[in-house]
Image (cartoon, rainbow, N blue to C red; front, side):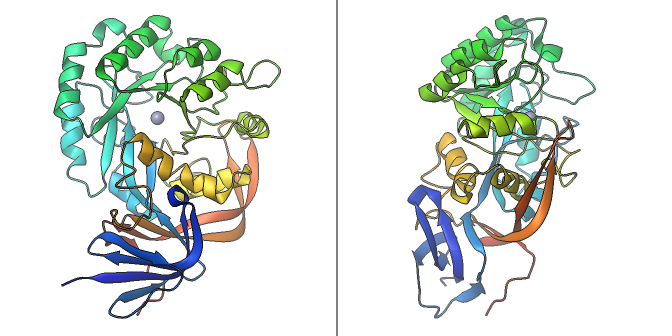
Amino acid sequence: MTQKIILHNGRILDPANQVDIIGDLEIVDGKIGNVGESLSLQDATVIDASNMLILPGLIDYHIHLYQGGSLYGLNADLLLATGVTGTVDAGTAGFIGYEEFHRMQNTRTMPFWAFLNLSPMGEIGDIIHEVVDPELMDASIIGQLFKKYPQELVGLKIRLSCSIAGKWGQRSLSKALELAQQLRTRLCVHATDPCVPMAELADQLRAGDILCHVYHGKGDTILDSQGKIHPALLRARERGVIFDAANGRSNLDISVAQAAFKQGFLPDIISTDLTAASIFQGNEANNLPFLLSKYLAFGMSLTDVVKAATMTPAACLGLLDEIGTLTPGRKANIAILSLENRPVCFQDSAKNVIYGSQVLVNHMTFLEGMPVFDDNLLPRT
Ligand SMILES: [Zn+2]
């Protein structure tokens, strides 16, 4: 028997289809049905979404999930409560731990994809950094994993901070780019306190590669000595390099972000970079809706913020025909959130603060039409 749920009278915001209406959205057998200003409520379970936002399920494009194999790893299913219906592990596992990472994630409800760390050991925690010796980046083992998990592995990851890759510098980056080219996949580069100058690094990234932690404030940043965005970064954007905020607890500097926003340098993707230590803690990242509220405080529009956590990550995954939108017929991955007017303070690790006046709070999450989180505050009949 057909099971129909109608999310009624909410603000339906779907950047991929340029939809922003007050109306109703049908969920039929796990898929999105009709979307319109006023649908018949007959024979349906009706959830009153008045004064709520109805969004595509959020996608966290940079997070650390490898629980058991890294001190960073968190239980992805905790994120269902925050409107997240898709997660991308940002290279927590290297090839040594990948099979175990894969096995563990398949015990979770949360859909996942992953970047494979180019260091065989992956990112195991702050107490010991991964070795990014290019000699250890085994093209054959890495290639086999990409062949085995073609849907799941979405790119390669490398951290090029001086404290991690200083010994190898450009050699590590060159090998990473070469392997990404061979595998025809994306390269995601973490470049806080980069061991290759930011402008040189940006000039080498290819269309589709990702520079994460784009607004970090450690060492060489995206700003030149005059506080202007390096022209190399602008060229990279022009070429199609993707800029991910990947905030984390210490990978965003509010003053860098503010300077970049003033120059119109917005993030393509807003992701959390959450770890076991930072999930639901503090006012730096905490959870994805909270973090998105920080970008409202920076002056981004609600539509752009939602796009950066739904449509753009879905497009980067090559899955915009399945997720990241509210197009009828797609998987009913949906989040119902309120945008609450209340003072909120956001901080970074340098103790800079920015104040906002609005905060996003998730109330209900659907994964393929199933309510996987429900705070029970929305009336229903
Ligand atoms: Zn990270």
